[in-house]
Image (cartoon, rainbow, N blue to C red):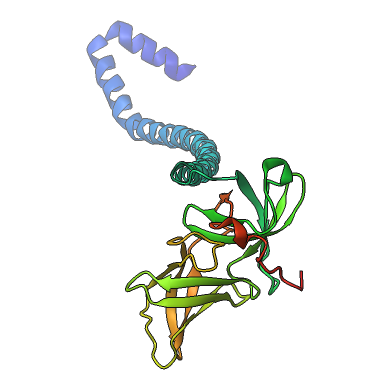
Amino acid sequence: MILGLVLLGLSIVSPSSYRVVRGAALDALSPVTVALSDVGATVSGLVSGAGNYWNAAEQNAGLKAQNAQMRREIVKANAVLQENRQLKATLRLREVRRETVATGRIVGSSFQSPRRFAILSVGTGDGVQIGMPVRAADGLVGRVIDVGSSNSRVLLVSDRANVVPARIMRGGVPVISTGRGDGTVDIRPLEVGRNPFKRGDIIVTSGTGGLYPPLVPIARVIRLDDDGAIGLPLADPSEASFALVEPPYEPAAKADTPLPEDR
């Protein structure tokens, strides 16, 4: 109070002296003011930074959730696109083949068992009969061995009981394709003594026997084996969603089609 009264009296009696004293006080308190201002700015920055951090964390979590959702949608869209492509390819194949009996979805196939089957979603109600050949857009699938009213069982070309007369598309050398029970086929020439195969050769049906029409792709040669070769079927039931059931190439062939003893 005394200091305040002295300063008040000084400002009244000698304003010029008061301004000198006030300037000196301002200079003396300036470091303290600056320090307090820096502390305030630091505290404010910490609060603001914490807020920005939490906002960024929330935005990051939201972006991760959106990214995961987008990936799921992309996977779903790719699956639908692939299925549509397979369906269109099957439909184009059906347009080429005038005598298609039925078009069905491959609803299951065996992989762990040495017997190789697939289930097709068409049956006697669609005109399917035992012995009819089945093909997909990529090639031969097999033949019908069991049939119900709405489903049928197909013996795949990779089954050991399935023997298909064929030929090498390059050059037309006649061969026999026999399933190995492991997802591949064994291909042997009718003429022994030389190996006519090359890696990458495409094996197609020959039409011999009358069951399968000629020039349907069966397999691609993946390696040579003595005087024969091992091929990988071109029509994979695990990847093909749809398949066509066709009548035998020659009607008399259906009755002569042998069925596998072990089902």
